[in-house]
Structure formats: structure tokens, C-alpha cells
Amino acid sequence: MNTGSSRTGYLLSKAFELGVAAILLTVILFPVIWLVLISVRSVAEVYQYPLTFFPKELVFDAYREVWLSKGYSTDWLRYFLNTAVIACFAATGVMLLGLLLGYVLSRMRGPWVGRVQLLFIVIQLFEGPALIIPVYLALSWLGLYNSAIGYILLLIVFFLPFAALLSLSFAYSVPIEIDEAARIDGCSDWQFFRKVFIPSAKVGMVTVGLMAFLLVWGEYPFALTLLQGENRTVSTALVDLISGLSVYWNNLAAAATIISLPVILVLVFAQKHIVSGLTSGSVK
Image (cartoon, rainbow, N blue to C red; front, side, top):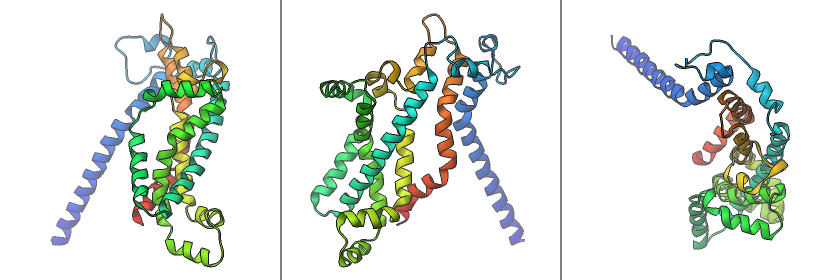
């Protein structure tokens, strides 16, 4: 009797958890689903009233028009490649420097270490638009305005505190005893970092790199201000699909879906690394 009651309670508890999870998942994914459903409609159906949830007919003309830049001045393929190159280089720089900075902070002792970490947290509170004017003046003075190199350097500096704080937990997870053993064997600081620390913290390294890639891919305020013409990224090129007379919502939704695909693929294929990397430091 008791066994049957406990099993019924267990099943009800699981059913409740699954129901709550299904509701939350539906709420979270609804904007994405709606975006895709808008992108596969014809222009006439997009503007019909009342608008139905499911399209009457699946039409993929918006994807062809956007990707081939039919009727637009936007070179989507070029902007897509620009974004991919910038995201890869910036994510690599953020990952390497963030891991190096996290390692140094984890091994240093003194009151200034905590103050530096607090400073990194405070820096995260500054939003990108608040820094646009000084950043614009600095890059113009350096001759790096409207330059992919200048934009990549800016992104590395801007996201470095976040990467350092994230790397710090992975650095603490590498036991200090390994440092001492390596020192006894005559290993220098750089040799230890390259040959011992990086292999030990490779899960965290991959996590920081992937997180930096996701942040850089969708960066908008700095890209809008600092990159012009053929150097633009896809996030700022979306504006070209909005004219003063009309907005082709299906084309805009198709472009947003195309832009989101690399991010979705990264999240799907690297989900295991991201989750294990974000939780490994807390377990230690």
C-alpha cells in the first residue's frame, strides 16, 4: 500500500515537472517559432488580417531573396563572412587572454587580487552604448576606425573581463599541488601554463571560447558605429531590410533566421562542453 502510494506520488511529481518544463520551453521558444513561421509566408499573407498562427502555404521566396540580395543593396554573403572572421579571431583572442589572466589571478596572493576581480565585475555593468563616443575617438586617433582589426581589438578588450572571471573558476579547479610539483621538476611559469595548465583546463578554455563567439556574433552597438560600407556585419545589415515606406517582415524574419543559424548550431553541437564547463568550476 505504501509502495503504491509512493509510486503514484513519484509519477505525479514527474508529471508536474514535465508539465512545468514544457510550459517554460514553449514560452522560451515561442519567439523563435514565430520568427520562422513569419519567414515562410508570402508578403500578402504577412499583411492579411487577422493573421493566422500557421501559414496557409509554405513559401521560401524570402530566403532566396535575402541570401541572393535580390532587390537590396546588402551583400549578405560578404557581411556573413565578415562576421564569421571577426567572431573567430575575437573569440580566440578573448579565450587565450582570458585564460591567461584567470590563471595569473588564481595564483597571485594579496588584497589587490580581490580588488581586481571586483573591478572586473564593475566593468561588466557598463553597457556598450555608454562607451561608444570614447571608443570612437580612440579608434579614430589610432587610425583604426572602420577597420576589422580595430573592431576585433575592441571586442577582445570589451569581453576580456567576462572571460577572465569565467576562467578564474577553471583556474581554481587546477590544484596548486600540480604547480608545486612542476616547479620542483624545473618548470617555468610559461612552461607550466602551456604544458600543464592549458591541458588541465581545456574544458574551461573551450567554454570561454564558445561563450565569446556567441557574444561577438550578435554584437550590435559597436558594429553599428565603428564599421561602415563593405566592412559591416550581419547584425547591422538587418536595417537595410527596413525602408521608409514599408517593412517586408517575411524577408526580415528570413534574414534573422539565417543570422541565428550559426549560433544555434554552436549551441546544439557544443551544449555538452558549455554545460560541463560552466558547472565544473562550481563542483570543485
